[in-house]
Image (cartoon, rainbow, N blue to C red; front, side, top):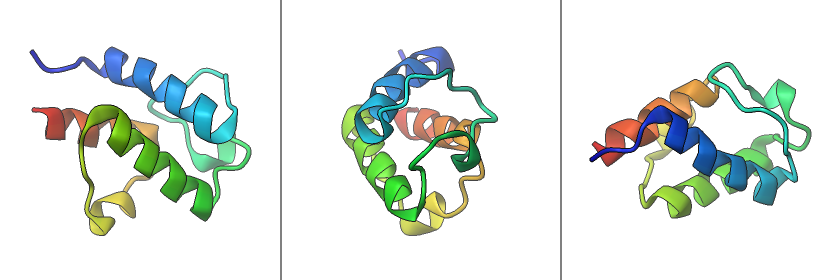
Length: 81
């Protein structure tokens, strides 16, 4: 059974805590403007941590297309099928 978006967000809470020491609410509209330290290096670290957490791999072209956290969650969901 695939993971729900709620389960993915719950998993990303741990990723954001580890990478950014961020404990705020995460939602589909969350962007780098909302999270201190989410710059280009932080983005790479967060993507790598999310890949490890969910056992998925992204192509560079996919990663650069994410405009917000909702895009990342949708991509993780699609890869988990």
